[in-house]
Length: 110
Length: 227
Image (tube, rainbow over all chains, first blue to last red; front, side, top):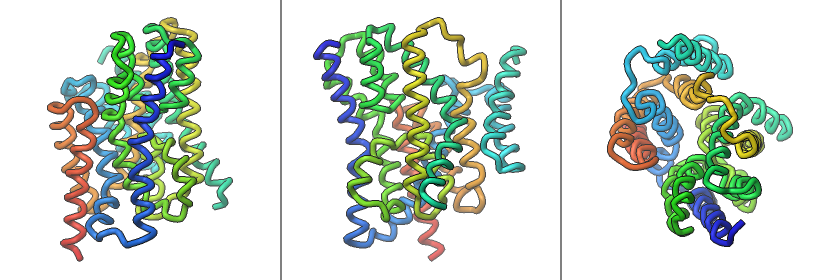
């Protein structure tokens, strides 16, 4: 391994840790010493659902950066996931249902 | 639940997702050796960075022999979404000592964040559950990357088996049960168009930051109106 590659990997590691640790430790520290402002508490409460929705939206509706066709395998897969999780509440079942739907529709060239 | 049982629950619920993560890791491992990384470098980068999207972004930059600091800066921008996740985890890990959080921080990833926050909606998070989830995701990614680095392009195309759909499927399955009231629907209803707009107009993963901040600001404002 060249020194340049080693430096790249170390640099990437530091950069990534700097995205993960500071706010976790900062808000943890702050929470122990003074109350977070109420608006901040409410913002942090709403964040997980907002992040999850932001993660999934382009994966479903802009796969590969192109708008999904209505009726594409991915859109059908998404509908199956949503229905199965609503009816069963079972994560594994709904994910498996979605993946199998997408694989089958792609397999028959839908 | 005892911490031991929480770890087991974290592992069990992460396993199906880790299959998708392993496939993603294998694709990355195969690409990484193609641009000249040795198996040792693949393993080292996985251990030290453990952030798939930025590792993918680094591959063409390594091929172009970009400067280490340029690749590190790109890594920072690609992974900046983790800062939002870290901020939202912090108040709910208040019971965990600071020195443990310094280790837990390295484990923040999209999939474990999604599973953990969806399991502990609006209540303190079990650090043990999170650790179980992270070990499973990272284990899957490392094993996948090693397999990909060894097998290279001989692996079958995972697209054929719909395995790339694991990620949207998991995230969607975790979002839908949280759409219970006007608050949940409003947050998601604002996050969707913002994410699309951001994915269309902004580079990299900035759409996550734009949509997450915009939608959670609305969510915070709604709770204030209600008193």
